[in-house]
Image 1 (tube, rainbow, N blue to C red):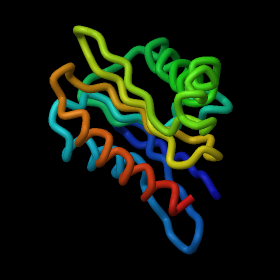
Image 2: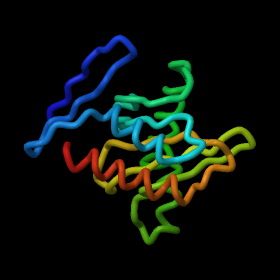
Image 3: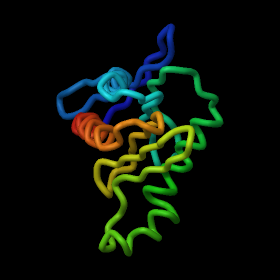
Length: 147
């Protein structure tokens, strides 16, 4: 996978090039948010480095908040929380996790157990989580198919 970050006037775009294809991940995330009502933020993250690689958001989010999202994603998809849940998942790694509060619902998705990348979604608490999961899984699968 070749990863190129392109700075633009309004932010950064991430381009993935692999398997004879080229993709603008920011546009994929924008498309995901357009399909899912109530999704304020969609981010593509690297779980190993705990870094947001690309973000699409309706509003500005502080870097500390983005860092917290990646920390949480790493914990719920591959850290202590995920390890504790493996007994419930027939000793399989979690591919998804949801945390909910009165303020928002946060969805964390990984395409496969061996992938180090994740899609993180921050949505309204009344968002259609089944749709978020389905569209998010499809979007992440499309991104990872290019990687």
